[in-house]
Length: 411
Image (cartoon, rainbow, N blue to C red; front, side, top):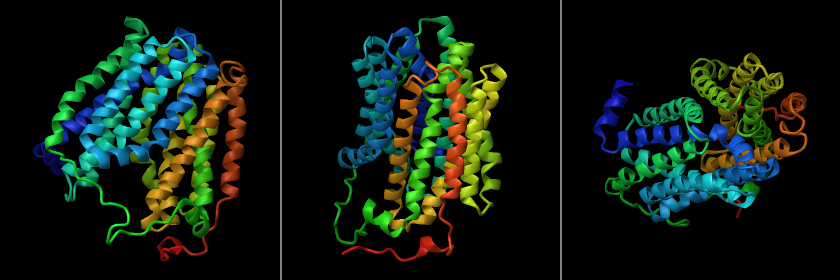
């Protein structure tokens, strides 16, 4: 780790990118835990419209991330980073001024689009600065650490702002943080000059199969995408449904506490649990167990007390840490290396579909705003059933080296 820190210090621009990532994650989590509550209680927007707004944010971020990466390759990494920051800053100002459904949906869509532009460009910038170094994986681990620290501290600062000032002040503060990063990041354009992407079909380029061909020759991906839909449905409950329940039961400031517990638990469990579970050969069983843990967490959310909410978040986080890396591992084994980017895009799309279903359910009359704690009991039953179906329908490998077989190219 000391070698990695030394590399970061002596590579101009690295410290700025890592610190910037912390500031961006801090600013995002300064307000994200309270976004659903703010729109419904302070701005008077209907739960249905907030569900649509969160769905717009989800699809803009997840569905357009490939587009964001393509824009970065075409026009330059640093301009794309700055455009993403500007969109996010403007989206928070629009949220504060939104008094009806349409501006709220537009603002959340802009927020997601800003993330779709920034995230792939930010990763590309860091990789360009340390290109060819053996420590590049460790540098990305530092980036993840910066993200998680921001995720842990941001909600607590947001809760403090709620107590000391008006509810909209957190959104304006986050907007100001993003705007403050624009000039330092813009100066990186001299250290990270634009390098146009190689045109598709150029000499030496590897042929790539499309989605239909991947599903045809690697049917394991059907299960992987279906599992991503289930996981997305469970995971996105923490963005909309959980804050509504926590605020109703314990107050808005407590929402930030739950987000901080989630962020800290992710870091701790990644270090203590992931390595042990990776030794278990039955991936479907591990993934199903993770989904079941999330389902039990949902059941505890419905009890409403501080202790049960905290315990529910811990179980939810355990399921998140179990499922996410293991699903990525299954995708890696399912398809050859030449097709994995497309395959990961397919599971990302599955997550977006599942998240959409989560927002629809949370904003419906059966959601926490209408059915109250009954919603979480329904999720407990649905989550347990989905975990069982996921395990029962998993493909059983007859050949462990399936992922190494030659790529079939359709003429």
